[in-house]
Image (cartoon, rainbow, N blue to C red; front, side, top):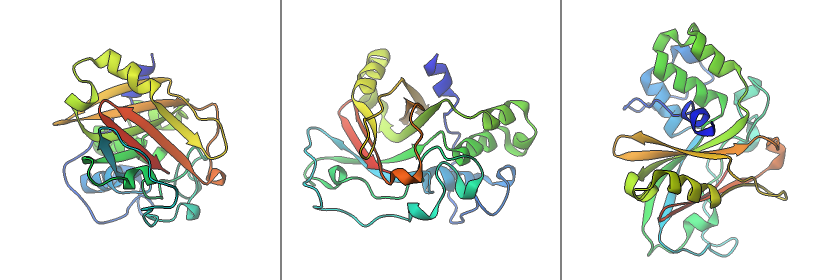
Length: 236
């Protein structure tokens, strides 16, 4: 059941880039394909990170730390400027110290997305239904129903890394090796994992229970996941 639910969050990504930040400038149904691509690849809800292949050890606290990207404290949580109740902090910090670790290890660029955030769901519906996204009953239901799960997506890994030929077993393994941790609180563990083919790579969707409300007041949320031979850690 969770696999079917996760499939609803598969991003529809056009193939061109835009330099404009439009999520506050115009209604989602008026976004162009360039706008959608910008939102799902470089926005407060989608940031570039790195997956590390092989065995790795996190760097000591404070070492090799990169400056923060953006300013999460200036935003509401799941969506911009109070459009909807908070659900998760905007993505604003650099990858965790883990991702700044030994440079001898192979690192693969990935995009980490807070897939269940309203703007990303709007981008999905705009990509799927085009201008009819504002009138489609299916799109409206998807956008107005508050998700019962948090969904984090990791895009950019090759299928051979993700599943190694065993889809169901790989899902179980990833679920057992993934957490979403709010500072000072017990980590959340996945309730489902799904794979969505995306050209030569696979998007990995990881669902976490919405049993804990995540807001900006939490200050820091860290995703940690082992996906096949790749390890991803990212601080929102």
